[in-house]
Amino acid sequence: MKKIDFLIVTPPKASLGKPIAKTLKQMNFQVEVFNDELEGFNNKISKLFPPYREFLINNINEKLINLVVKLQPKFVFIMKGKNIKLATLNKIRGQGIKTINLFPEYISHWKSMSYLAPVYDYFLIPCYYVLNQAKKEGFANFYYLTFAADLSKNSPYPAVDKYLYDVTFIGSVNNDYYPERVKFLSALTDFDLHIWGNKGWLDTPLKKFYHNRPSDEKMFDIYRHSKIVVNIDYHAQPIDGVNIRPFEVTACGSLLVNDAVSPDIFRLFKENEEFVPFKDENDLPTKVKYYLGHEAERLKIARAGFEKTKQLYTWLDRIEELLKIIKF
Image (cartoon, rainbow, N blue to C red; front, side, top):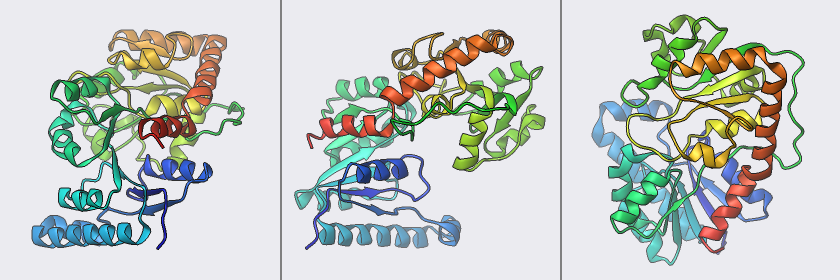
């Protein structure tokens, strides 16, 4: 019977599962990956026929249990796991196997978090506000673990000969979840603004600045060739965490101009030394104009942001934090 260290349960294109699995393998852990996603034709059809969807999800869960029995991993490490049933997790834990969930969301998803958490030994979230909520409600298995950059410790600073974009934003538009994005970016229409993300941007006043949804490879290339990258996080409810953008942007050597909605960004990076914060739609264009006109200062902060991320915020750093949490 084969025994491994980690069975990673993740969609194959997920932005977290892939670098985590890669990093664990580089650290000489025995790792296997299981795809829990409904893909392509099956996913489309299942949305129209709920019984068929239930059949497919049951099949995924049965395959996962069979694989766990075969591989006997020490840890089953699930990225959110929307298709993994509680009964499945209970069967896995019944075999003496530890379960981990990395749930990369804010307090808006608290109902799902509090429902799932009891069947996990470790429930990882990127937000102190959620962590405090969990403690208030008596959960002892919640841990803060933020995102990271897929960056090597010996990576050189990614200097570019020619920038293609002055100001870039990459992200979805959703007025329920991200109500500030259109408002903030509308303050930048007098600049060389470029927006990538979901097609919802075509239904906004910013549609002429919109390109498309980039692949991961294209996204990093865009960041590298951008003088300034704006990040606008979640504003609909209180947060004390950041999304993955600050780590991706700084890893590409661009100047990160980040909204000041979360205290966590100020813990992770030094204000006006490793990133530039902005308060609102009046402050944002002022900051952008200044740093487009002061190249030396912009490059100095961008370089410092890169060095901070390379030093402390690679996936190697994050996995080392994880290993301490799970005592492995």
